[in-house]
Image (cartoon, helix red, strand yellow):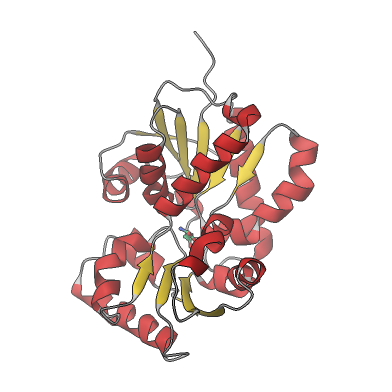
Length: 276
Ligand code: DGL
């Protein structure tokens, strides 16, 4: 049987499934393999060193599964680990492999959405403290004013299935208010965490009616399509049988119970044991 070379999609937990869903919708013929490092999630409050170490382990696992290309569908991993992996590790591991993140595709287009040129970023504490969004956006849109707000409780609320419950409203309202208090001219908010689309309804409810609220899945999917078009040497290595596989470092039962909420359809995952 022909060897499978799926595109790898990674997140600390379930959030990356919101990205995978959009990628599959746009690029259905490729094979995909998803890994959620649920046993060690959330990554959002962990140190650079730890997020880098965990992410690298997962990237190596994807390579062992034959992936020519891995998407870090996690802002925290993209902010804290991607650059080091691209610059230091890939040249040593395999120069033919590619690892991409979700920050660059989003920062490339964010300026086109804002009329006031004042944008807000809602993200995990780790992504905010990395300063990655501010730095990257300045490269593409030097005139854009960027404000950040960490939302440390949102990922745990989503992961614990509390995202539609009443108690969650308090924390949704709180972080949005804290962001908008920084500058009332903000007209565009980016949900810079792949878990946050599940809170979209509540986020809209507590934002001004004309606020533009951007989620990353469709933006990343479009950017991947463009990347594959521009890199036929990578595209040619990705197998295309439409297969989807799901792995978790924690309980497969829990994963399968939660995943459909993020992915929009039921999945059957397998367990993988990573080092440590
Ligand atoms: N979904 C991840 C992100 O986009 C965050 C989850 C976590 O904190 O582990 O940043």
